[in-house]
Image 1 (spheres, rainbow, N blue to C red):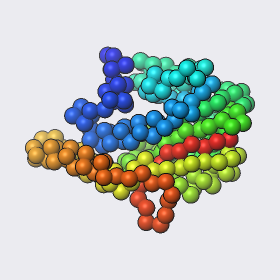
Image 2: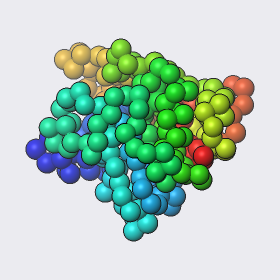
Image 3: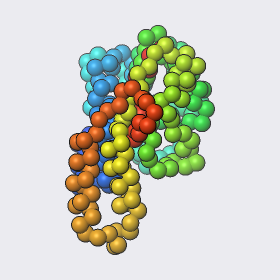
Image 4: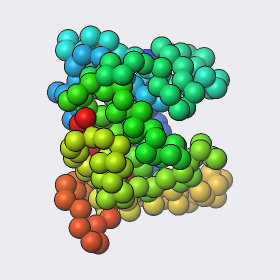
Length: 238
């Protein structure tokens, strides 16, 4: 990562299917589509919790934002060689005062905290009345960051957690439906094949299939029996 801005652009914003693994291309495209919906809602003091390299900080900038704070664990990571968080935390207590934030961003975050009720209650604590949490969580995705990969949520489990941790209303949607999910599974299967054993045309076919499936996909707003989704995102208001 010689140029962190170029890395963020290529791997999070202007993602090119020819430059990144197919599965990463799909998930970053679906995440960006969800992140775009948060931009009109951003204002005041924004907290990026579990921020990593804060890939969306510049992308989401609007004059309505007074302060953007990134918080992450103090454990050293490769990312922290390039971008350090503004604050460190212990994974339990957010080092900010009660009712001090207008907006919290938590992308691909909640699955890594075993006590979901506690972490949502802590987010609720630092939000002002009327403040908003924007979150994303994966569903069709391999184990990652083990042993700290604890959950794959259903929408209805999240509804219960939001209610019990003190939020007033929420809007939960699918990052992708069955077509995106199939594209992800095909990508994982392809990426498991050793490079020296991949048949040359499979990669080209996969790229065509991914673009076809992503174009056919439809967002899920109202979850019913039989629905299949690749991940979830939403807005939760205190």
